[in-house]
Amino acid sequence: MSYTAPSRSPGVGLAQKKRVRIVIEEIRGEIKVTSLWRREDIASNVYYKWLKDFMEAGKGRLEGATL
Image 1: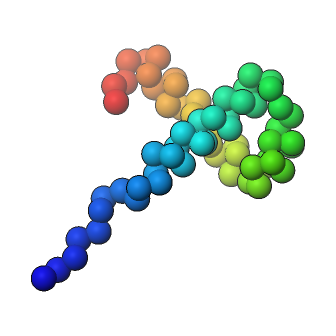
Image 2 (image 1 turned 90 degrees about the vertical axis):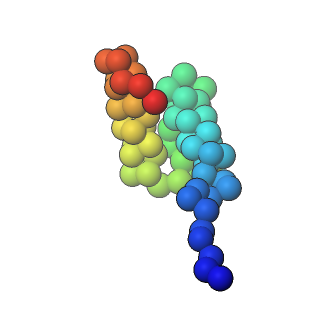
Protein backbone atom coordinates (compact mmCIF):
# COMPACT_ATOMS: atom_id res chain seq x y z
CA MET A 1 0.00 0.00 0.00
CA SER A 2 1.44 3.37 -0.93
CA TYR A 3 0.86 6.65 0.84
CA THR A 4 -0.07 9.76 -1.11
CA ALA A 5 0.45 13.04 0.69
CA PRO A 6 -2.36 15.57 0.53
CA SER A 7 -1.90 18.18 -2.15
CA ARG A 8 -2.13 21.00 0.38
CA SER A 9 -1.28 21.26 4.02
CA PRO A 10 -4.26 21.85 6.32
CA GLY A 11 -2.86 25.23 7.44
CA VAL A 12 -2.19 26.64 3.97
CA GLY A 13 -5.48 28.56 3.74
CA LEU A 14 -4.99 29.93 7.22
CA ALA A 15 -1.45 31.04 6.39
CA GLN A 16 -2.71 32.83 3.28
CA LYS A 17 -5.43 34.59 5.25
CA LYS A 18 -2.86 35.68 7.82
CA ARG A 19 -0.63 37.12 5.10
CA VAL A 20 -3.53 39.05 3.60
CA ARG A 21 -4.56 40.35 7.03
CA ILE A 22 -1.01 41.53 7.74
CA VAL A 23 -0.63 43.29 4.39
CA ILE A 24 -4.05 44.96 4.59
CA GLU A 25 -3.43 46.10 8.14
CA GLU A 26 -0.31 47.97 7.03
CA ILE A 27 -1.89 49.34 3.83
CA ARG A 28 -4.76 50.81 5.86
CA GLY A 29 -2.22 52.52 8.10
CA GLU A 30 -3.47 50.75 11.21
CA ILE A 31 0.09 50.02 12.33
CA LYS A 32 3.59 51.10 11.38
CA VAL A 33 5.31 48.56 9.19
CA THR A 34 8.25 48.14 11.58
CA SER A 35 5.87 47.46 14.48
CA LEU A 36 4.04 44.96 12.31
CA TRP A 37 7.26 43.10 11.50
CA ARG A 38 8.12 42.92 15.18
CA ARG A 39 4.66 41.83 16.30
CA GLU A 40 4.33 39.15 13.62
CA ASP A 41 8.00 38.14 13.87
CA ILE A 42 8.64 38.46 10.14
CA ALA A 43 11.60 39.88 8.24
CA SER A 44 11.15 42.98 6.11
CA ASN A 45 11.99 41.10 2.89
CA VAL A 46 9.25 38.54 3.67
CA TYR A 47 6.68 41.29 4.19
CA TYR A 48 7.64 43.06 0.97
CA LYS A 49 7.35 39.79 -0.98
CA TRP A 50 3.85 39.29 0.44
CA LEU A 51 2.99 42.90 -0.44
CA LYS A 52 4.27 42.45 -4.01
CA ASP A 53 2.31 39.20 -4.42
CA PHE A 54 -0.82 40.88 -3.03
CA MET A 55 -0.51 43.88 -5.36
CA GLU A 56 0.18 41.72 -8.41
CA ALA A 57 -2.86 39.55 -7.66
CA GLY A 58 -5.03 42.64 -7.30
CA LYS A 59 -3.68 44.08 -10.53
CA GLY A 60 -4.39 40.81 -12.32
CA ARG A 61 -8.00 40.80 -11.05
CA LEU A 62 -8.50 44.39 -12.21
CA GLU A 63 -7.15 43.44 -15.64
CA GLY A 64 -9.73 40.66 -15.90
CA ALA A 65 -7.85 37.61 -14.71
CA THR A 66 -10.04 34.96 -13.10
CA LEU A 67 -9.33 32.66 -10.20
